[in-house]
Length: 497
Image 1 (cartoon, rainbow, N blue to C red):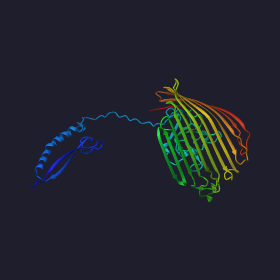
Image 2: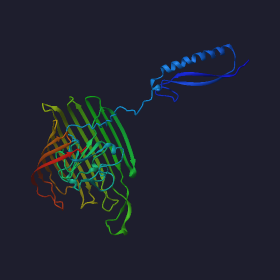
Image 3: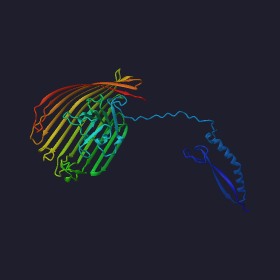
Image 4: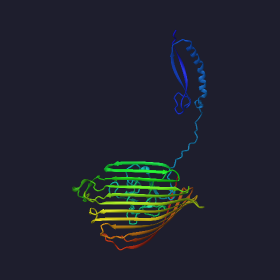
């Protein structure tokens, strides 16, 4: 006789930790799976097997409850449940600070820092990045790559000192720094100091300081290649590698940026009030292409002594449009610049645990202005302007429990040599010798809630002016000039919270 019925079977299956089931008692140890089957026989084997399962089922359940986690049987807690104290600690970003850098925690100067994340991957130049900051005005003569200068809090561009890793870019010949000649591909951060200038920068200024901090070597091996394309045939290619396997390291950053800059603009033909001759045209002779290569090598002599060698090469060829946007204009300005630095850092020296940094620097810049057909200037011109500067700097820092004393000394010699390539004039070179000394002490009170920073800066300048020209362009008689400046300053920083 066939007998149909139902029987229940339970299986206890082990599952992997981290994959809990909704029918589990513990967080991923065991769960009970229920299965229902229908059988139809009265053979002895089936009946015996059925009896075995009925006998073993209570044993399985007992084993399960013994092995299940105690958390499945947690007793209810009377009243509110109090958790342990949770402390949230912000992880401070490693800024790779080096001896000679401005301490943002102590400086009383009004400053802001533009980090690489804010402009990385964008096809922008330096002027476009910094003009978004408060108190900054940028004057630009055209599109991407065109001549641009910066003003801080209404100052002139000459009153703003621009540095690259502490190396001054302002020339003794005058004029502001052309921001378009500073590539962003190897920039780690842009520091903007408004008004009061920290003594870490050898030369003071009314407007303030912009310090371009380039990428520094980090542990391990890293390499990137990137490219970009934009309107007006703008193209960019960048390459970077950084390797620091141990005590020695190297870093190479190279990039290429170019654009035709043939954008449409409204040409008024120099007659602002006459709208009849206005017309939309493509910009002519505004193209540029530039290359930038940064090479760094360093060696950790000991844990407190390090040697760094840095060399940066920049080259740029650009066209200069005429005032009336003439298609025949071929005027150009070619710029080449090289900055080499040798730096020795030695920290924790002597009984006073002094931190020191000594730097040797040499920079060279050559600009060639070619307007041999007289499309822009008065008459035909083709001139070279060469600026050479070499010098040395020293920084000493003494840290105590209640103050930080900084001593800075810089000395450099600069030569400016113009040359008329058409041979119509014979201009002579000029030179400048500069010696500067700075002393700054940051004193903390009330657990450094109040920091008072007095500083003294002294600068002596000796000029030999031999390349001056009159308004018609005729050379003037050379003269010498000696000047000295003494500028005290004091700042206060109060942390209310």
